[in-house]
Image (cartoon, rainbow, N blue to C red):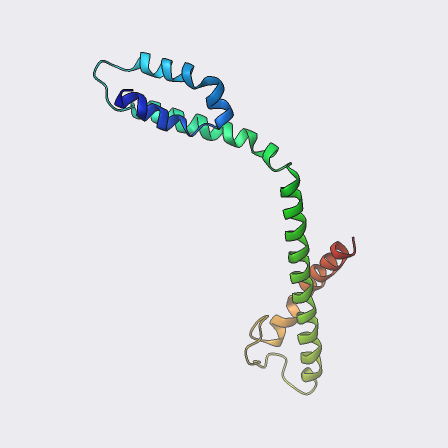
Length: 145
């Protein structure tokens, strides 16, 4: 095996195994026939073409990979964890808002609060209320099925 052939075979690894099994010899024959006399390295154009072609074929078959049952199970687990996290954050927001609603009586509306996780002022806290309510409602509905 020549150095050029070994380098072309290395570049052909960008293609999926099933594609290499069916077409590697033919592709290698065309690449070696196109090579100039004494050429030891693949031409940059050929390198780019092989990498691009291999990635394209892998991306084209990617949706088939994600249809496998283990991916569906993983997506279900991740969606459950994220829904619980979002619901927990929404409940934390509601508790913080309820606590600050009581504190609003008799204070200036723009008074700074120490280390609010949702903003630096009470106005910031209540300005994001629609987002947190929607997030909590969506999470609760997702968990309820």
